[in-house]
Length: 124
Picture 1 (cartoon, one colour):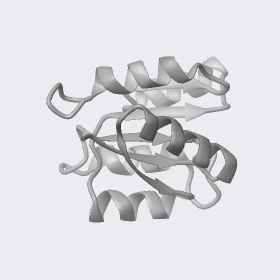
Picture 2: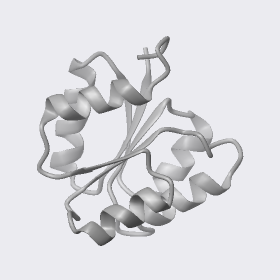
Picture 3: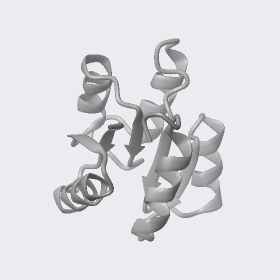
Picture 4: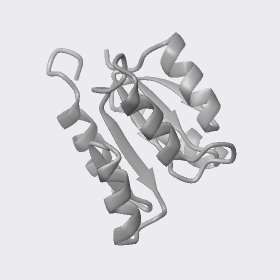
């Protein structure tokens, strides 16, 4: 079973995403801010990261940059899942190394499909 780390500072969104991904057959861990996310990645490396860009301490973009700069996490599949829908933010996320960029609100089925597409076949 693939392990997904979900990072979002909105408790309602976090709970909804956790439930959605568990129902889709994933194991889920959560983090409410960027520092927690980085700690969780170090202690329990996920197979996929769902990352909000608007976080209270360090931005999701900075988390993305830090993860991409480390050899151990440079290839971790990351989906930015954010309310920032302008082209500039999308381009920034993809340029920093996000594998995908999904704008809230989103289709739950689309998120599940994109998650499966980024996971190695044996863990999806």
